[in-house]
Image (cartoon, rainbow, N blue to C red):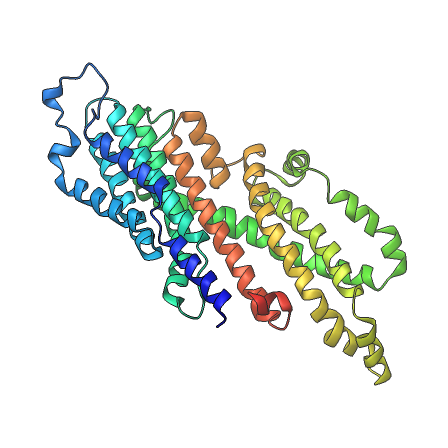
Length: 392
């Protein structure tokens, strides 16, 4: 190692070990807040013990986090995050047991702890590490932000609703949504089966099959490419919100009309991407196969189809997101039997049961992510030769 490189590395290490003042500021704010009132003025102070007097272990957590932030090293900043989140959780749990809205002490504790956790995680994520000597820390650097952000969002949501004593009929707490999710699990699973199995998956399969076949026909027909392809491009831009009521009138208000929405949303992206994948092949590879007297079917299966798979999977990943949103909107617009997650969200919102609304949205989001993850796994399995799959 040259002297310049050694000097640069030494300076980089020294910079990463300096005290992180913004994290310290958040921890000091949280520390001051623990001595302030946790309820608004007007409540008898004798009935509400101060947070700091009742919880010395919270002060110990804040002190340990402050020492770690003052040290400023990567492992120290990684320690700050769980400690600050623990202080924020304690503040929310303490406030939820109190008889009134939160005072300035509660909000200072919550805000300081959340800022400290967020800033420490962000600082760790931006720290440059040597891949050869810091493999465990590199894994932590990749995993900590993904694990921290959900906890931050949940605590901020719960903390603001609890601190301001927002009624459940206006905006529910995270704990209310969790309780409702457990209590309504069988009903939500029945709705999810209708929405995602009968409507989304069925429509997805039909849209993929017909879209690929039509795209293959267009790719090998100059007449269809000039006549049908522009119409497919234009029709793919039609808003599904306008088509949903028409499909409901034509196919009925049951699940078939919602599945037709998914077919339309999936069909046109698959058609366009299939045409691109089958036609935009490497001319040198095509000429090589022809020089070996390869038959058209051999050219299709050995060159054109593998070349089209990345395009088709890109269309499927985009269509999966749009199809789920479209089918939920279609269940809003096509009024039928009170089944399906879209109908559950609509009916619950009209009744003011927003805990059920958020529980249904959570179930829909989880199943959507699972569907997208399954498509990504299939893409890696079928296109492992592609540079994008090797890079991931």
